[in-house]
Image (spheres, rainbow, N blue to C red):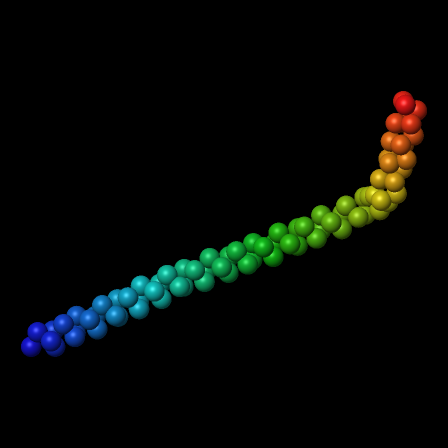
Length: 79
């Protein structure tokens, strides 16, 4: 009789544990979906920012080269 009672208690514990894990899993899925949407928005904003910077500063490498030449000229004049 006790064996059957313990078997039913064990079965009930398995059911509760399964329900609890399913609940945790569904919360994790919701969190991952939200994070995925957030990273997609951040990536879209980052791409828009990059495009805007490219439009505003199309000659950044040329400006850097000119800065380097001015820097060399100034440092050689001070020597």
